[in-house]
View 1 (cartoon, helix red, strand yellow):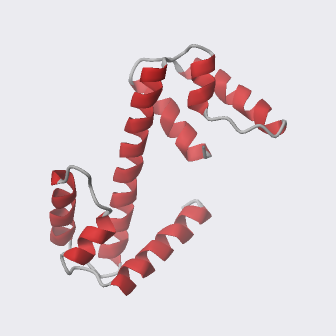
View 2 (spheres, helix red, strand yellow):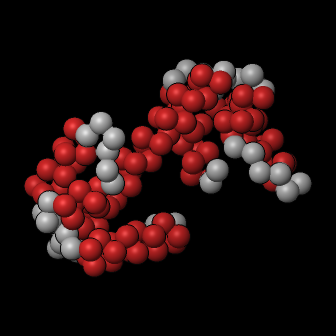
Length: 138
């Protein structure tokens, strides 16, 4: 799990009253010690092993984490599309509403193309920009 994912997971655990900041910090220290030994282990797995959360709580937190990550990615994708003049705020709103209505939501970019708001080359340009910004930590 990446650093951002672990921070998000920890914040969700605290927000849901499953542990406190000190417990998260202790687990992150365990994770860092394991990484120094070449062992990769997620924060959730460490919390489970230390009996801070149950398997059911782990699954629930992972689902909440994924949902939050998707919302953040959608927000970022939408902002980039608007900033580059490919999409209007109203078009973004329509796409987000469509995505929320779906039982198994499609990716936001796919919905934007289906509605004719973005061309495949525009989506590709936005996704490349998004990836570059992610890698630069911006």
